[in-house]
Length: 481
Ligand SMILES: *[C@@H]1O[C@H](CO)[C@@H](O)[C@H](O)[C@H]1NC(C)=O
Ligand SMILES: *[C@@H]1O[C@H](CO)[C@@H](O)[C@H](O)[C@H]1NC(C)=O
Ligand SMILES: *[C@@H]1O[C@H](CO)[C@@H](O)[C@H](O)[C@H]1NC(C)=O
Ligand SMILES: [Zn+2]
Picture 1 (cartoon, rainbow, N blue to C red):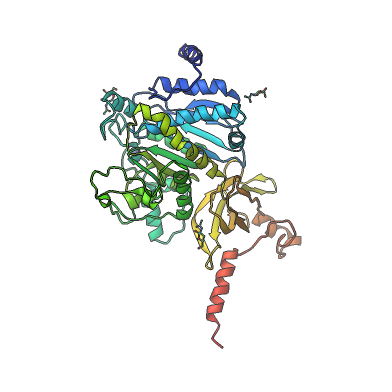
Picture 2 (picture 1 turned 180 degrees about the vertical axis):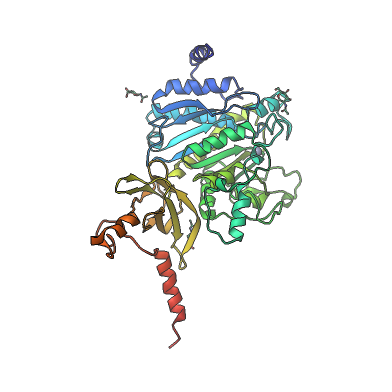
């Protein structure tokens, strides 16, 4: 009955097909998504996360893809999350506008948007904290804190499991276990809120590659880690193993935005002529490392990176938290290119499928050594293959040795060059040989398997990285002539 009623309202609503820039309330939000879906039913789907908010408001998502509802190998998945802090409202409206834009441009045969939707699965969650939004809106939207938290007064961007603490401890002990750390969690600092749990289940169930969460209150693209290593509350750069790639992702948004990266703009919150008293992120290209600004524990961004294969950054979209309604259309223009450019970033680096003779290998580990410079540098954050044996490894331009491995198989390493200006990741597939078949089969025992056949992946017993390292060690040991 409720569903029929919703359909009826959607029917009435879609008579006014033009998108209006305004603050859409919690009842209007799903209607906007349904309306887009009605218009673009072939390439979209509306769904709700597994659990609603504390006040039982469903957390709605709209998905764009040419196979809505299904993951496909070689097709990276991207998400945008708005309004995690209920009183930071711009992301929420931008995502509703983006949903309309993607649909309209697709129907208008915009080649760039068509190719983006054909090659990418895009999920938009306009509001992660509808209860906070309601409270902020009821109280006039002016306060810096009212409505920030959920209806249990919990800041959702502090409520995720603190996996930074685990990875920092492993680093200190020199243990190279660097991904999917949720299994290593032994206790929670605080109970998980329903909104957090819903988003965690979402993050863990879809093989996302790239993500951004939208906030307000400053103008900057912020990248991991958000938590400092020493516990310093501010000003301690906390680099992740993918620091270079994260910086590049943040820059992609900042430089495509109207003035996030402008070196001449004023910083937010500058009240006096003393600019040095506050941050002016424009002067540093519109990007910042999280902990270099201020450290936080339990954020969503670091959780994505440390629990899954997903790279997430945090976008602060403007000095105002509760953007005035008459500025929304202008803000859309200022963010539109950045929103699209960032989704394309899911197509940088390398991707591929890991198989054996009988099919896909799930949970194979794909590790990378950066061999661009004179010294090979392992990037100590591995990604893993999904249900179709597929992996996506975001990387900046350069030379890399990529190794696929799985217990019970010989690892395979291949060297690859990641070019500039990619709109599709370089495809690098791996076929692994089980160790058992090698040792069990008398006739091939002792023969280096398939090592040098043309067109076949080369199988190295030791990785190229070790060969290079050994060469350097040998050179050092050679006495001077
Ligand atoms: C949706 O799919 C149908 C059937 O394949 C096709 O006839 C129609 O043109 C498609 N519509 C759009 C908007 O792509
Ligand atoms: C929870 O929601 C109710 C109803 O909207 C509201 O009156 C109350 O102030 C909210 N509490 C908090 C802590 O947000
Ligand atoms: C790879 O190494 C080069 C040279 O040291 C460096 O400039 C680049 O940032 C590195 N790339 C990544 C993704 O770490
Ligand atoms: Zn925020």
